[in-house]
Image (cartoon, rainbow, N blue to C red; front, side, top):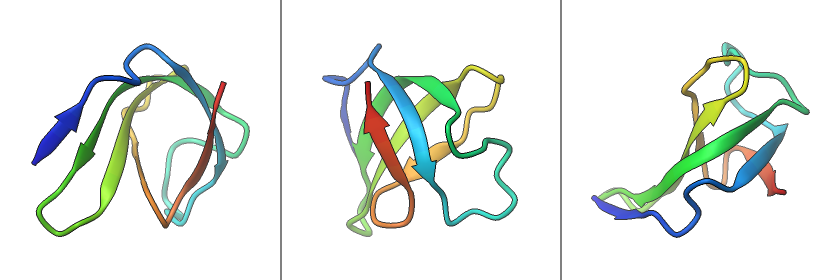
Length: 67
């Protein structure tokens, strides 16, 4: 797994998620911890959400905007 900390500290807003059980909602904001690529070829954005959640966003399944 490769980790990129270039986005660390940036703010992010959730636009949509494929996770129906997620404890964050569209419009929620958080702070990026890091971006990582996995051996299976997808990327995910690790976020500390303002509501206390640690849900990571998955590229291609979730949508977000960097603020």
